[in-house]
Length: 241
Image 1 (cartoon, rainbow, N blue to C red):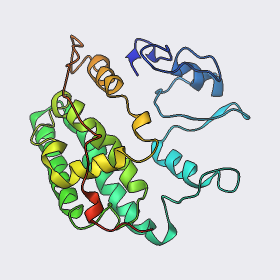
Image 2: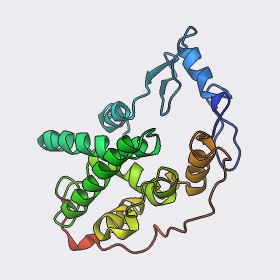
Image 3: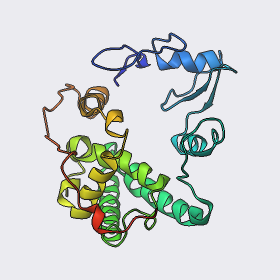
């Protein structure tokens, strides 16, 4: 969860995982295993093909699509988070959410001018306001169907109050201050298997201890206390079967 001098590390500490497949100590070793001459950026996530010993993709938007359908018929659980009839709307929602929210928090946090920060800040909260309104009318982002658009938004929402409000100066409102967004976040978090993928201590430690240009002393705050297991009210809106 921590980027050190050599980048992303597999150290097995504090509940994190070691690389049990290739035995790498750092993520850059995975990149150079795939391409010994590689010297570019080392990013996560990474989808690794252990048969071909190479990286299939390091782009989350591609990986989520692959995991959605590539293993159908060979043991994958049923379900489709990118149904053909909804693809145009999903793509439109994804584009807006990515630009203004997923990437918007980073535009705020890494802005080097006041004008750049102000622009990103305004766009971020305008988009959150629109999403709050949208989720007042429908159970999920694309009607009553849970899609990849919801999971792409979830990854930012679940980190927002713990990290982005303070670390990235996204402090006009918390997600907790949005009734629909906060209940929606809790519904997604409480779906089977999701909570096990979220370690709030790792999230806080990663951001506050990795970005020394923003937080040079790497002091990690002790809070906030977030109760994502609290009951939600999303059942008041219909969901597709």
